[in-house]
Length: 377
Image (tube, rainbow, N blue to C red; front, side, top):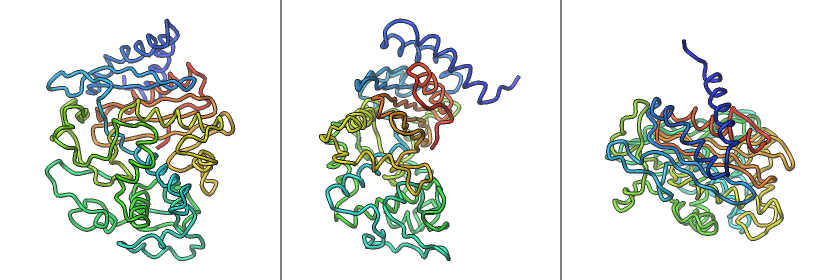
């Protein structure tokens, strides 16, 4: 009998919720992941790592292997490709730069772009393309996602990616819908945002993120390593396909940094949720400063997406969500800032998405988060 994805997830979530209720929180988290041993094996997913945020504290639990061939166990320093959760960090970088007065979120982005010209807007467009719209998915851009490159392939520059010219393997980025009218998920839009931030400041994107987000949040195990240095390889999870085979080179390379290029750990990314919770309580000593959290969690053009996160609910029950899907890596982020709750789940298998969803569903039920699956991109 073939079960629907909804049925599979419902069964997983019910099982996990029962096990979660037993013992201390740490033991319960361990029960969640150990209960997935069979499912992980069946789906060819070598490991899963979970960071839970509850009352502003972080608990980290891992299960499985960094790579299937060697049997090396994952640990607290094992980095995964964060995939599209990179967009959340990129958007926060733009937000911090705006708080510092270095860019304006609502300015026409053409005033920042120097190395690449924004294509003509569709006929009838009455609103500009802005950083807010680029990271809020309302700029009307095409190119939803990127496939990445084999480890030994030639890598395109930022401009080549946007122009869609070799060695880029993706189409040229264009504005295909009038800005501010519809929500259209676009990694290409985030790449325009990356170039705009670089051109506006005269600095590399990696250095901007390091200074604006990673250092202030003490995300010491995170970085945009594309390619990683040889010395880093021993602490990187390796990507595996849906059959459980290790992908050549350990995964694809993503020069599209803002869209997909971050390596991180669940506990590092959980620090973002903790900072959001502190900001929600009025703490100004976070990268959000003043009203930065409100900026991030306000629906752009009223279309359901904030800066780098999908939104649901309101007030204390507002939830920010982000999924991450790169070749051989699947993950998800859920943040409930008003409740000081949330979680990050990361896996190194191409068929790990339903497992990520089921774990998040179980946590949502156990901790009464004001949101449930489907968890949006």
